[in-house]
Length: 227
Image (cartoon, rainbow, N blue to C red; front, side, top):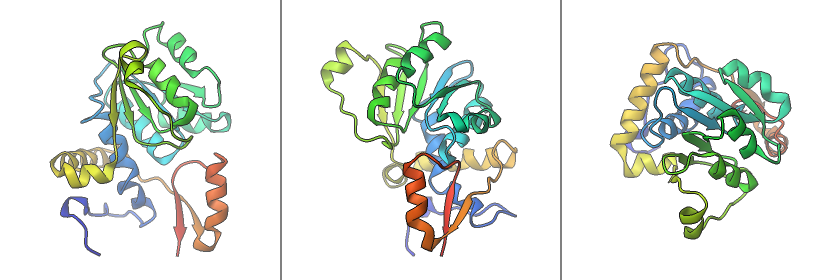
């Protein structure tokens, strides 16, 4: 196949093809959201949604490495997985008032950075949970559906930095930034901050069943379909 040179990367020695899947989208997305776009710094607080997924688990591990306090969200049955990734606090992603819980944990201040992939009604909670004026919300997913916001909202309700992220666009439009992300990612792997996870592998024929489980939020970590 033909692809931009910046998008090609070596598989780390000893990794299987399934383990390397996260290097293509999940881990670069998590790192781009945290560093060049989210500008995470030590002693800041980060809210990470869908923290039991492949992107979320990587984001938790990286945020802790950079010295941040991590508040994560996940469905109740996945909280142990998220805590094992290093999160300081885990909230129920189905809680109807996530913003209030985040504000309680931060003494009313809110978080410095939100990694927003939930969409839907959770998007409003993400905006409300970010610190006014300095808070950043990096949006890279919309699992729960679209969520509109107006210029009036940004002026009078949520005075935050709203940042959109699509890793494919970063590769094409900002290859230098993507190169920096991949260089940092390689260093994190070499230093043992990120270790190869074992995806749950299914036969390609079971794809429809796997998609149904994904929609039902019944999955954890990375999923792979074997041809």
